[in-house]
Length: 189
Ligand SMILES: Nc1nc2c(c(=O)[nH]1)N(C=O)[C@@H](CNc1ccc(C(=O)N[C@@H](CCC(=O)O)C(=O)O)cc1)CN2
Ligand SMILES: Nc1ncnc2c1ncn2[C@@H]1O[C@H](COP(=O)(O)OP(=O)(O)OP(=O)(O)O)[C@@H](O)[C@H]1O
Image (cartoon, rainbow, N blue to C red; front, side, top):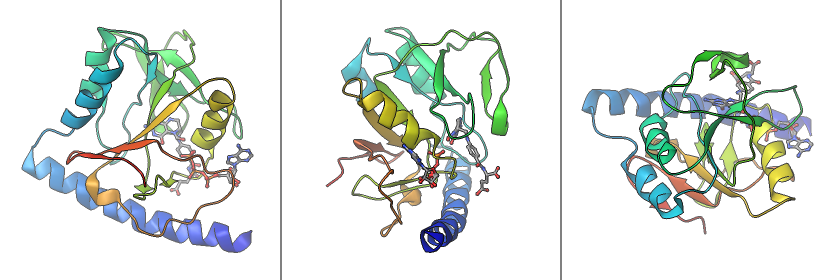
């Protein structure tokens, strides 16, 4: 167990550096980041969706989320307690936001709902649908809870440069159904 934690910590260090490089390259090229995400979401109009408020060097899903708002409910994650699933509160570009735990913005007034599609932030992904996050286990617990109730689609959204081949995984890691980057769409194999 200690070994896996150490392996994950080492992978996170590499993943942070990879993501930072990809973020800076994307900023310098000024190219669009969310075109493929918009395209994928257009196939699920009206389905309750969660995005995320980008922090640090995360890729920006906000334009695609704003488009989806025209067709159905869109929300963002809100941390309730450590070691508990996330809740999702309704969001639109006009929603008044305040700082939440760990730096991401959350709506000032909560209006909770359960999304059926989650755009999932991540540090690193693998082509097999593996995902490495910050280590809170929030998305793993959330996806486990939602998937026990109904079919739930987890879409990892990341820079292409965040791919890692051999991600350390454990029993509780929930797989990604699809990975969308600024360069294309990956169906996990
Ligand atoms: N934009 C965004 N919002 C999000 C997430 C996310 O990954 N991205 N989350 C996804 O879960 C949740 C909160 N994010 C988290 C951020 C940090 C840690 C955390 O445990 N950080 C450690 C060290 C991280 C490191 O540097 O290795 C710490 O602060 O001690 C947990 C959850 C909900 N909102
Ligand atoms: N469904 C679950 N039930 C119990 N423990 C869990 C569950 N999911 C994850 N955990 C535990 O939470 C801890 C953190 O998990 P992990 O390292 O996979 O986080 P992460 O996916 O990188 O983070 P996040 O999802 O917050 O971005 C691990 O100790 C893991 O065993």
